[in-house]
Amino acid sequence: MKNKGIILIALFGIALIFGSCKKGVNDPSFSLKSRDARITADWVLNSMNKSGIQVIKVGQETYTSTTTYVFDGTTMTETSNVGFGDQVSSYPYSYEMVINDDGTYNETETVDGEKFETTDYWFWANSDKTKIAVTFSGKGTYMINRLAKDELVLTQSSVSSETDTDGKITTVNNDLTMSFSKK
Image (cartoon, rainbow, N blue to C red):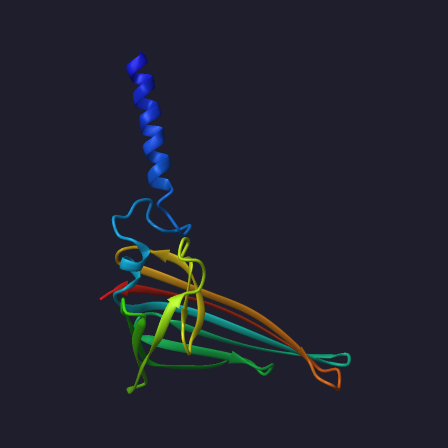
């Protein structure tokens, strides 16, 4: 009976240790690779959802416009509405990002057959201990929702508000989720 109790305590302790290896909420429970080793790879965008809402208030009048981008792995669909119904356009799209261990990243974006390539710098946006956010120069800071050996999910949310000298208030909300797989 004593041995069963010791084994249960040992198993509980091991579970706590492995559970503490997770940095992100959706990360694998246990990984033999550090977050540095897992993030440095050749990543291909599989899906993306981006929404933006702009609200302009002038006196008693309020104007709202929305724009969404949905990428399904091959096609980007853009839907915008400025108060006159949805306007939808779709086009072939691809995005690949190579995150290098020297602090650089290379991206290749192809929009409707036109290719754009960029090289810039990346770094952990918060302390080296937690590493739950990453900054790509020229692109911004993203929260890491999931970082596994073959999967990366980045999110970004922002809210801004501005009032001009005439009292016009402009508020913009943006939300983005991108899911990548290792190439």
